[in-house]
Length: 332
Image 1 (cartoon, rainbow, N blue to C red):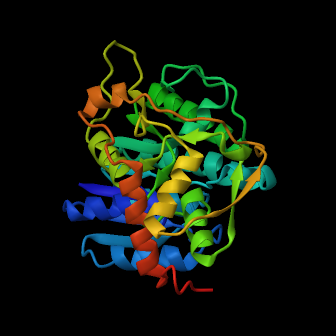
Image 2 (image 1 turned 30 degrees about the vertical axis):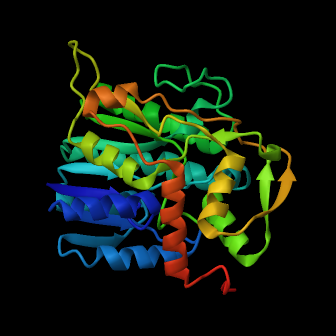
């Protein structure tokens, strides 16, 4: 099939586009290549994707309504996997306008492109951050999520509501995927695992918020991509007349890990103890995430399986290879 993958130079977008290309699909990837984090890292991902003869890249901002509409019209995609977004909980506290432009207006432009060009299924990235502080554990997609604690979370919840509206009004099949702390090779430099690895190799302290009394449902990127690829092949099928073709699923390991235990995995993988700097909880952070993936298992017969220790080991191996680092010879 012919796919559009937005955010193709991003972490999850890169892995997803690579997987689809390996399966023989035609993939058009778009990204605006912004400098929220290293553009060189994004270009390195694209360099690998361009080795696939069935991949094409267009530098395009999803906020550009006219050019995006032209792309949809010219390409006539069968499926769209929307992974472009302005990420980062803390960054949203300082740059709210950017989140509105990208995560709200940009997503509306994607919905319009799908609506006007008969796209068979839109799968889009949501986030575990929509659960906020007040949901019972483990997080279920049946829970009420109306108390986000960051603007980033609010925009992701807004995406879910917008997608449902388009499914209801225009019968556009949409599936939202609430990702839980995705990590792995080619990961984002603003994420904790990346920061911890770099700091430990450099012999610098790592910042541990809330004195380490928080936990995350860390989910390896290959497991996330497996879920994305399987779910895109399963457009929602309404069971009742008039029901909207819309669905939501969690993609998480289903096993929260304490932050200090994650740090220990990094120390083990590197072979070096971290210098720890304990700090209070930051605005926008939640204390725990924990995915209930029963609905996902029922729908696609798959649940994430990669243990954190193994995933962290693979990340550290990639990091050392990509940056030419060793514990003895850290780069500047």
